[in-house]
Image (cartoon, rainbow, N blue to C red; front, top):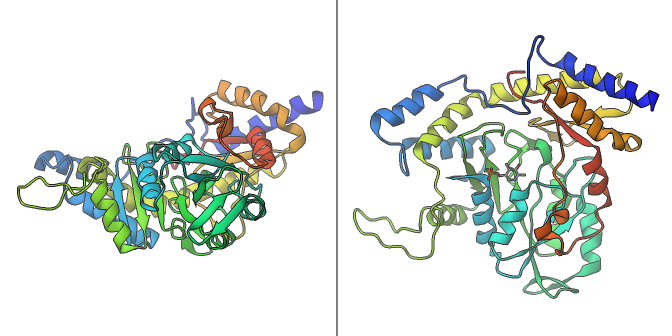
Length: 389
Ligand SMILES: *Cc1c(COP(=O)(O)O)cnc(C)c1O
């Protein structure tokens, strides 16, 4: 006990040394509006173009596509809606199964259920904090049957439609072997890149491996539009379809209201897109500052026993959206003591999400052995990561 109370104090001191002198309280990830936000939002108010159409929506989509290297970006109302539509467009149907890490934010799993599909939980790997493609491969070999029309779960008889990896706290999962698994088992790949705007895998922006991928611009993300999200794709037809069904599936006409299928009112308002345009201009600067903060954490924590600050995997350049302490296995029982001590002195820290299958609505969903995710859940602590720190 004596040893460990010492370690907790050392961790809190390490955090304090990384934060600005004289702070009162520090949030986990607060937005930064240091560019043209006022100007562009004022323009929306002055011209009356605040709502469902306007030049900032088009411009924001263009900037997102350019930055990520995807052919098309479609701005939508939030990241969850983006996931819902991306899953729908790869053909997810009622009673399909969709593979998803047990260690993720609720939105990834909820979006699967919006399609009437069943989440099927997969383990993570310590190296990326994301889905483990090798373990997934072995698991599918055991439980899946590949037929000409697709992949089926031998036990439940349901079709396994897609895999939704999530780039945890901005760190890319190992996409190449995952893409191979998808080809081998005839699965669609939909990347939940909500946390990884500005993160690259082997030099290419995340979100370019799946047929469709999704981003989020919620208030706590790397850039924010207040609330917002986007679908990105390299398939022009899917891009067009994504735009169409997120804008009520209205067939363009000067006055007539004709809709050719059931669509969704998921479009991003122009006033939010205006914020997004201003934020995109600052993204390179945000990323540089976030990397500097991560370096400061690495530096301060090298001498501290029992914990490490998570570093990007060797194949990745991460955005360091949320910096993360990972406790050594033998110290995991101190997670809550550290959380309490840090929050008591005004330093926002939080644990990883509760694993999905522990939530009442997903208790009975299929899952593989998720022992690594179980272990990580107990050892992860997110630490302050705002740009201005
Ligand atoms: C933020 C986030 C989303 C989307 O959230 P919205 O609030 O709907 O924009 C989806 N998945 C993950 C992993 C996220 O962190």
